[in-house]
Image 1 (tube, rainbow, N blue to C red):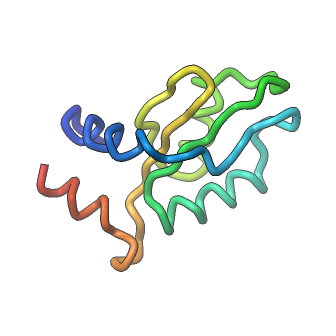
Image 2: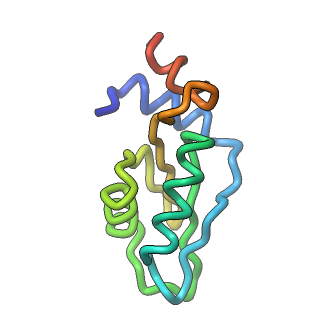
Image 3: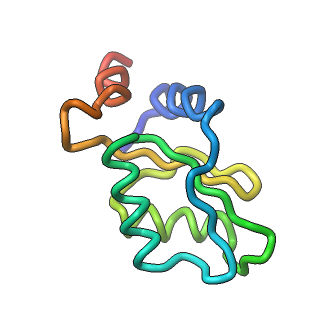
Length: 102
């Protein structure tokens, strides 16, 4: 579970990121969750955006993805979701190392 200070740090790190996944008409599905999990393993912090044509609600989609990928929702702003998950591989743990210092 992330503390307030850690969430603030992650939000600041995510600010300049571009969304790398888009949820469209098909909504959240197993294939997308698998890809998101792989991206989280390498990057630890990602943004996912919801397109205009989706029926998904951002908060619900965020929780659904977080549960499926075992990650944490850092923030939901409008149609953009920020997710974090510590990488299991040490070479990708740049953010995890910084979070431990907070």
